[in-house]
Each structure stands twice: as structure tokens, then as C-alpha cells.
Length: 217
Image (cartoon, rainbow, N blue to C red; front, side, top):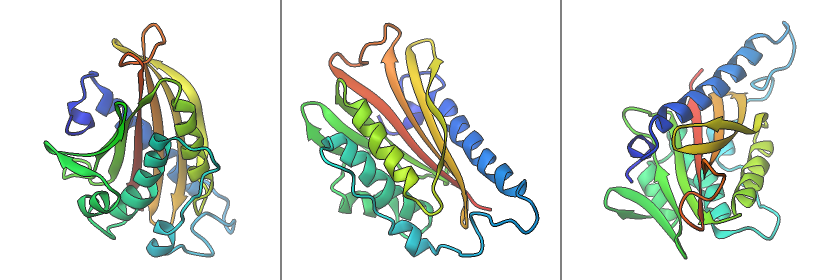
């Protein structure tokens, strides 16, 4: 699988792009609606791109390998790539991903892996990954992503928590966060996929989609 647009689930790319677009729009609207003279996330102190990219989060132990890969994707690849500090490919290689048939992939054993969706010409402000993990591993990923969102400057506000979104092939649990940053509206989405019967999508392997967007102000 090269990226989310080529995923087998129909409309998944549109769903995820719509999710982060709504989150980003909400952040922008909240900033616009702030009363005159009130402090906003972009004032009075502006966060430099270097400072934002260097906002690491050390998750509480224990952390699964796939949850750690989700954290690496966000803070070591997607943030610096979206801020234009580095190319996603260079960051992915440095983080241990390997290019495999056109996809940057991090193999973690026992079928577990992270597959990068880097920014591209069609979606230059979107970056994320498809995460495959042992059944039951979704909670650890969500905890790490939630922790990362809360530790950013400014913190990303949680908008949805495991909101059901049923499709023709899968049930999805959607969680989203957003913030208005000095660099633009930031949207974050984590979508856990299950079968229509509520079971892992690949036998004993679960799957989640992680997506971070940055819409310049």
C-alpha cells in the first residue's frame, strides 16, 4: 500500500482528509471568535518552527512498539516535514523506516508495522501513517497520541473520542484534536478500524490510521 489514497476501504482518504479539515477549521474559527484583546494561542508568545518540532514527549512505560512508532511518526517525521524543516523521506530514513515498493515502512515483527503517508503534491499539508498491531494494541496507541497532543505548544484540544463511524466494510472509532498554532490550523486524527462484527481487521492484527494536518494561516 503506497498511501491512504490507495487503501482498500472506499472513501477512507476522503474521510480522513475531511476529519482533519473539520478539526483545522474548528481551530481557526475558535481563534477568530476570540474577544478583542484576549490572548490566543498565537499571542503574545510565538513558537518558532524549531521549538515546535523539538517538543518531544516521553510516554509513560510500558509502550508498545507500534505506539512508539506512532509517536516517532508525529514528532520526528510529520511535524518537521509539515513545517518545511526536512523532507519526509530523509526523516523517515533517520527514524528507521525503509523504502519498500514505494512505501516507507517500519517493520516491528509479528506482522506489526507502521507505513508512512508523507506529504505529497496532492496533499502537501497532510502527513500520517497506517499502524498495524496485535489485537488490543489500539489503546496504547491512543494513549500515546493523546499524550502527544496535550503536550504540544499550544496543546491540541480533543474534539472527538472514539466516535463511531460505520462504513460499508469497517466500523471506525474516530478521535480528533485541533489547535490554532502560529504556523496555522493543526488537525490530528486517529481512526481505529474494526470489522463490521467489531473484530480486528486482519485476523489477530488490528489497524489504525494516524493523520496530522497543518493548514497555513
